[in-house]
Length: 167
Image (cartoon, rainbow, N blue to C red):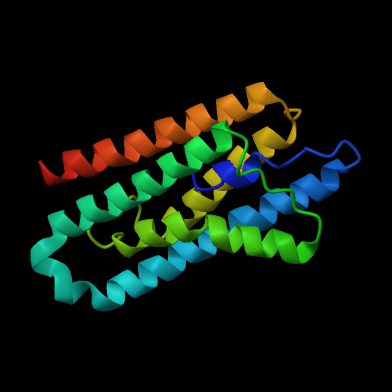
């Protein structure tokens, strides 16, 4: 999930209230869902150009997403990519940054749709649940390792699904 690196920074500060964490989770998930939908719209607009190369497009985008997620995993595990949102502006900026992978996934929606028009809701709901779970987990080395592990599993799943698609 693209929310992994952002979710690692939730609940770092002990005085941070749960309503702020909920708002943060909602903003990040909304940005991810909106960027997925933007990718879907852009991909469907230019899909006719790449219709003959659908398998190559899907595997390249899956590899790009998996590569970005693995880099995020290594950064989270080492504690280098812990982002602590303190202002509303930071929440929206982090939501946009974390939605880049969702945007890339939306680009190949026409080749590989999960659902006709509800996929962006599934993506947003999954990001919200991920961020919400980590809202209630106290910040620790275990949280970083668990987040890294789940992010790595997600990256490998995306890569395997891309490989299965081309077979």
